Image (cartoon, rainbow, N blue to C red; front, side):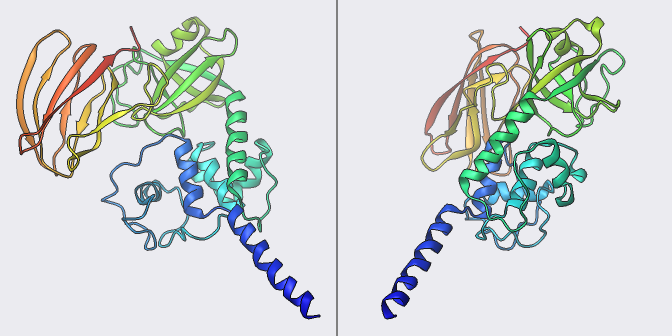
Length: 345
């Protein structure tokens, strides 16, 4: 009898340890989901963070930014070290993929979405593992990539008018309107009839015509179809935010972040940028923009001292290679090269 009790005492903790090892925490699960959509977490100084996620903790920026965007239902505590339930994971996955407008993606909507996208069988008591979470995300992304949408365009009637995000609509830019994709999301739109595709940036909301899922700018529509068609059937592949993905190459952007070991940019100077975008440089320490070499050989001397509360803004005026001469207040200097291209050319 003593031997049996002893064996049971060993087996139970081992089984529990294996279960804990296979499961994933709420914080880790969320960060995995967030990383998969390639969306940056911007300044969160205006957001009240969760009381149980400290500023020093990994994921603080992403969790706090997502809280501000109403990604979570929790208001005060996030419970980052609790195990991730299937119910919450599925909700976060559907919200992260923007399968519908935010008010229409709640726990009570899960059955409806799982009927449309059968990536799992809902189990209210299920605790998720990392592998299951990855499986759900990949399954949904595959279904979304194959989904066919009615796609139209808008042009002269809206040219020069404001978009839902405060931009000025230009029908010659490669942009689009979508009801739920976040601002500045890059999407590859492919015409299923001819296989032609174009990458567009979401800068407006709409269309608000039943059955239509996206309005392309006239220029974007004409890349993949004749304007006389008016409406086409297309698939959408979400690539990520324009600050993390190069619009012309579809590849992740890389940033030059450090001037010296102790002076780093919040984001930095990208190796590549699209003409028409603006560069914003900020750091937690003072730095100096000494000057810029332009692609045509001209050099602009600047000598602009930028404080931690300021941002230096630069908008390229031509395609080609720019060299930035950035220094510290102590005189250290570094050269950073940025290549500007145009997807319209």
